[in-house]
View 1: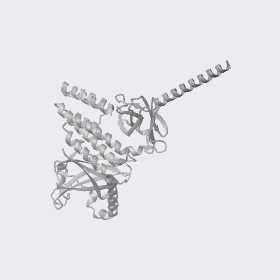
View 2: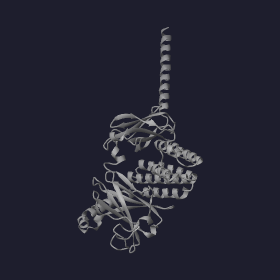
View 3: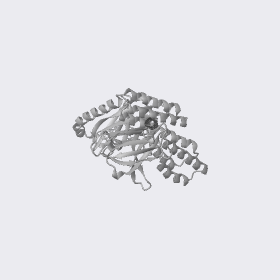
View 4: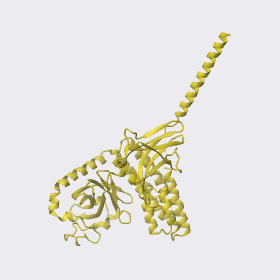
Length: 435
């Protein structure tokens, strides 16, 4: 009888042990599903209906199993649950947001992200030891200002010489880039300082051989100060400048080519300090220092051959598919994934990434603007401008859509055009939110 009791005890123990092992293995197996991922962190500046500025912290969560998840923003080590984009899908990559009034966010604030799926897998993007800084995404301090674009043609060198004025109230040094574009080509040129200082006004210049450009080309100029704040210069309507529209005499006001000091009918006057010999002599040292700084920026941006390769790929995408908007958008989305992966692998740096991302967004905006023009028989100018403003980053948010919808409805467009435009913009919002 005692033997039977021991046998039952041993048997029961074995059964319980096997059950415990199986249960543990099942939990482990459940937790060993697809590892989630977080990427494309950023901060977006938004305006609400009362024009109050808010900062939206954004991140993309991706899980091949499509598991539900919780995504948390740690801002200065305080937890903030993030809201999912209702149109998104975790399998494809789903945006998560957390919004704050701009007045409550500061450059030195630290943040990182944490996500956990329902099977127990979790992931960090950044962490408490190596957080992100708000200033790296919004720019530290005051944004720079660029103005007075002016071009002259040098008969001796056969160059188009581009000039622009750079201001920064904090005196931060700037790196400026000229972006040239036509229907089939896209080029960038680093501009170099030639006089003045950031506080009172600093002239930047770059020469482009006439073999690389025609007067029907378009351009815009970008600036980034030494604290990471940036600015872009477009024409008064928010479009690219046309080269021919800002060409003036070689030296404004000296009689070469005629005209007053304003630089001719189409030209823009260069800053007054450029005509002051004493100022020019006094800033030779600053010019040399600024030139060295610009050269350093150039070295940093060009050090990776991968960057040039990606720029070439982007040119090829635009040239090949610009007449096929849907295909072009698809290829641009693939390029976004590619540059995100390259940034993670450190085969391009943050500056390279920003340039590529900006260019992708601009092409996306151009493609969509042209699509609207081709689909709508008569597009009012005010709506066209508003759409271009919304598309400056290549995407349309739900808030932007909510603002433009009543304007479309109240316009003088034909009913059919209103409906076409409404559906088109709404489809872009859903596409953008599902990326």
